[in-house]
Length: 69
Image (cartoon, rainbow, N blue to C red; front, side, top):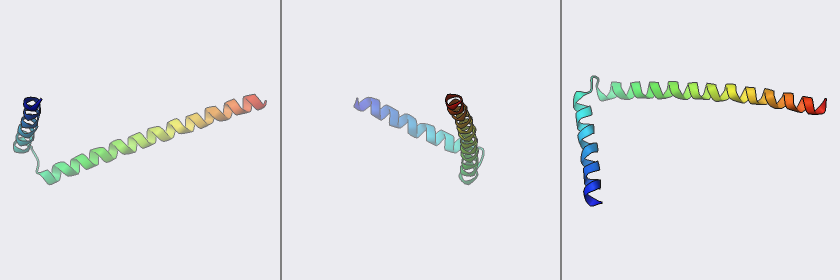
């Protein structure tokens, strides 16, 4: 188990080092790009949830009106 954990940590460190050395942009630019991408994904997710919620409410209203009718 100890060797497994040591291997994992070594791999993570090597990956971070290689990524840092080969990154096409500075860290500041990369962080800005990541924040923009995450913000866009969050907005799209929120919009999708909102649309689905509206559809669910409409379906529930239809069911209630058909039961009352």
